Each structure stands twice: as C-alpha cells, then as structure tokens.
Length: 91
Image (cartoon, rainbow, N blue to C red; front, side, top):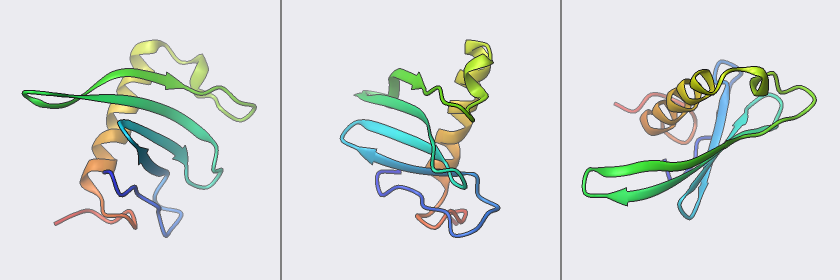
C-alpha cells in the first residue's frame, strides 16, 4: 500500500499513494482527490486515526452520511492493500 496504486486501465476506479502515515485516494479517471486517511501503528497493526473526505464540484461523496463515507473509505483501503501498483490483484 505504501508504494501506491496507479491503475493502468479504466476498470480500476481508484489511484492511491502514501506520504508518511497518510494515504491519499483519488478517482482514477478524474484525478480528483477524494480521501485522506492518517494511520497509526498499534500492537494489532495499522489503524486509521483520522480521515477527510474532500469536497469538489464533481464530488458527490460529501452528501453521503458519515457511515457511508467510512464504509467507502474502508473499501478503498482494502482495495489498495490487496492490489499491486498497477491495480491488479496480488496473488
């Protein structure tokens, strides 16, 4: 996940990259930043301690309830953790 994920095809909707303890997620075909999540190391692994959903002209996410945004961010993190840098599933 630290190396980032830069999809090579339109089938992959998210591009991600990490800077320090922060993960940034962008919609791959728009390039618009959608999420920023800060992680902290604990005995059980890494956990999100703060997150932001960006607002923008084409961003329809900000009108969603917090629980829906949290669920979407969780899915994006799961995808980023399970894919190689080109967006393909790790084996």
